[in-house]
Image (cartoon, rainbow, N blue to C red; front, side):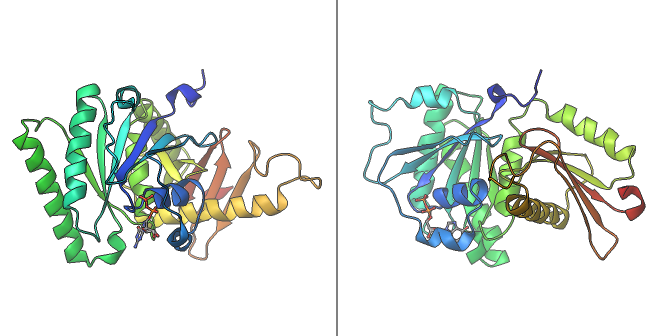
Length: 296
Ligand code: GDP
């Protein structure tokens, strides 16, 4: 059977106060919007926005918390939604006063946990591009401490929160999303194992399995991930998609710009060779080959 069939699409909720950056994250990660364009995104007044991205491996919804609307309105079936959720990402604007966000985080996590104890709670300490390195670490420590103290005070220290420092202006948002998605994939150990066998038999340095639409990596072999390699691979995907969209369509514009036959090799001037191959409708296997001889 197809391990990537739609039933296993991880369902993710993206929540946080208004203006924390949820729409921007969605646009940048899933719609290739450039970070600067998010400055002009319009805020909406809806309590709940849904966006299910069909072509991507990830299936998710965004929920806003406009201060004045009570999200736990009885007419709103949050129980049903929490029940079907694999991960709840809560976005906190690190450049703003985050006390209200922390209160919302606590309320949301405790409500969600009552409905579904299996949800992964993921906290994105977002917009850290505006903070100095020291300030980043201090903010993370402070948010981590306060959020866990609140849980302990409520007798809920068994709830585990994971924290990530993110920004749409670099690859940290893709990296964080990758980690969140990977936790939801039951086949992850098998995929990692296959990639390990693959690299040990091919002389390839590092292999990633990407969701090409979002540039989230679904799996990689067990050697450590180096941020620069990951960024190179992301850049390669952009180049290949852009070129495919220009030259990959038939003259009448029919067909898809890239398909199962798609493949690309990029040689850099430092002996690194990048090899990209589509393996499924939305998956590319992207490889960083350390030595040109193996590229053939
Ligand atoms: P939402 O209401 O939670 O959907 O928030 P938006 O996505 O509308 O974002 C609010 C503002 O934050 C926009 O002006 C974005 O450009 C800005 N923003 C989002 N992410 C980042 C980030 O990582 N860094 C910085 N500096 N600004 C961001």
